[in-house]
Image (cartoon, rainbow, N blue to C red; front, side, top):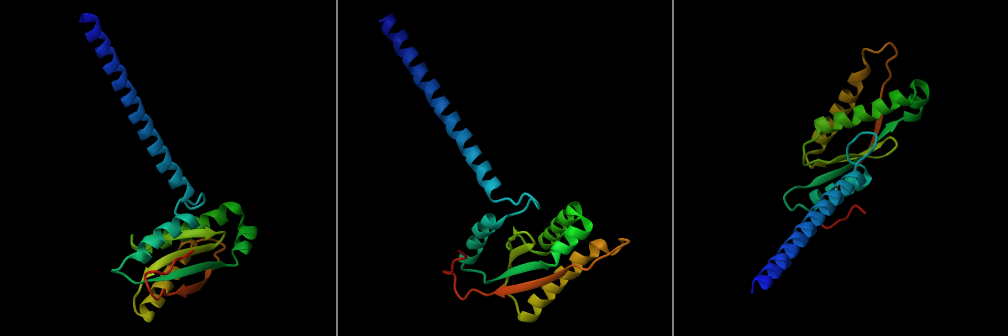
Length: 173
């Protein structure tokens, strides 16, 4: 009986250790997957959302039955000239600055991302047309404040495209 009890104890201990090992592996894989999803949705230049991350976040917002949104594409005009004239470091600073301005002027429920070189996309909760226009003007003014004290200031010019989805079932993709 003593040998059977110790064998049983060893078997239970082995099963317990295996269960702990499996749980640790699941936890590790879960954290790694979450980290990989975060990397896949992050723009390496701005540290904010990239195109993939924007689509995921925007889809959640657009599916909301409570709010109406406008989808805004914002292009930084003549960015190549800034990049060639002032160099890649200043070009990158401009992109990071513009992203920061957008993040500061938009709410948490209005995702923003740099989707390629000099183009940003963001959602605006629907408001009256004049209010949307005023918000876009604030973005332009705020984006241009950073270089007013430079010896060689330059004006950042933007071009906007706006789309207002008609229902909650429309997809971005």
